[in-house]
Length: 427
Image 1: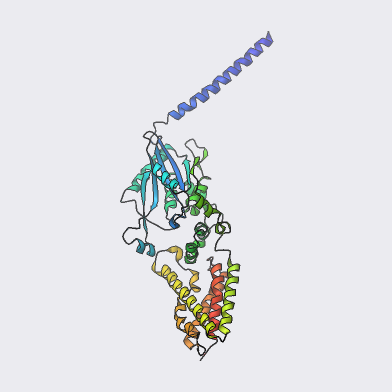
Image 2: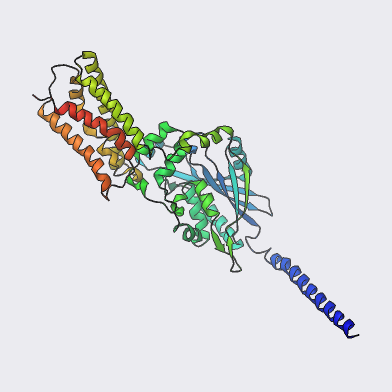
């Protein structure tokens, strides 16, 4: 009998425990349902990231904030980074660095279909915002969409489609994204990231790299690096926030890939320039070897008594001076006449010297066997060489931080060759 009573007590305890567990589980949906009527509870917010496209202005990718209304079924995509080639003075404003971009809204289905038809990757990351934060974000985006608020001053690295999306989300989260990302870095710079994305189009990547000044070479935090939509998607997946119950939870609660890049874009990602990067940074030695070899060949032509070889040297030297001097004028204009801050104080000006244009008459005269360098030409050639030497010597000084070793390797040998030719023949 005592044993039977003991078993009955154990059964009673187990029944009570099961009842308590069931009651706890049953109470949870009731608590969730209690927020169903809270303003913003019917909204769902996602970050959409669209991969790079085939056109040059699509190489950095794009992103948008999508807001779904689960009651009405409406899904709106809010996009920054919208520009119009037909806008008055668009190209003039582009050259001056006074670009005005804007924000627009479209249906989410249209956006997804557009990028899928272009063969671009589409990634959705649903965000764990509270109902109040979702509502606040939608109200801000609708305010921002008004014609008087839609335009903003565009800047490649600090005010573009991705940074505007980042800032809008960070604002409703009380700075949580910035606090999480600004203390972390993997050593990337604006130059490294821009070169990487433009590498499949080297005819544009190389002039862009040449035109970037020291501003592009500062080390970036994950916050800064989020100027690239794909980088922001990667970094935001590592952000945790505090939910309404005081728990630390991932900001991204759900991810979905709507499409993958097409075969051509996948081939771009696998191209040698992308796999062997960073490009052109890191290629100073092979570039120097090629430049020195070419200059040695021209040096031999300059020493030859044959008129045709002398003409070849004069032609090559004149073309170099013309191209380098003209490029230098462009760099000087970007620094002094525009608001393109990423092009200011460009150290390549010491190599692409506009003063080279003044040497054109003397260089063309070197084709004649009786040519001579006047005093002005010698002084000018010596000054140009000295400035190029400062570009090299400056690499050991803390004030010269620009990553331009590849341009030094390419352009210093021709400077030495021109100086040798012009300084040795005197009146």
